[in-house]
Length: 127
Image 1: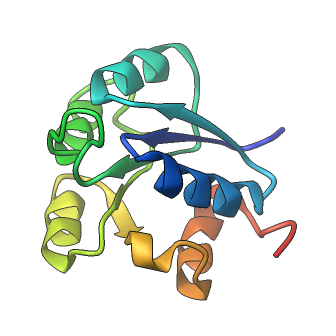
Image 2: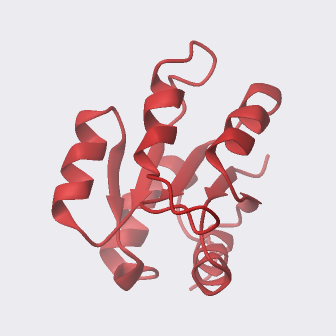
């Protein structure tokens, strides 16, 4: 069965880059604009990984709020979530909230990012 990734709060160019990288694993990408939409979808469907932007593109709220919501909800607390941010402090804070180590936009498609995604998505099927 295909792995499923939920991409939350990215602008179009970043979403396209992330989608291309995730699809290289043979996984499918679903996209929502806001954390509230993500929580709604996560209640209905299982996902293997959630990627959330540090600053939500549509309303510029903090993506770490989604991590807090997910980790405090019984149904979503075990779903792996990563923050998409180049800022080390933002990554540290996300991890302290229960997120996995994430990656920055500058590293989409980089070897270490692909390796970071393998525990959730398996080995890439194409490069």
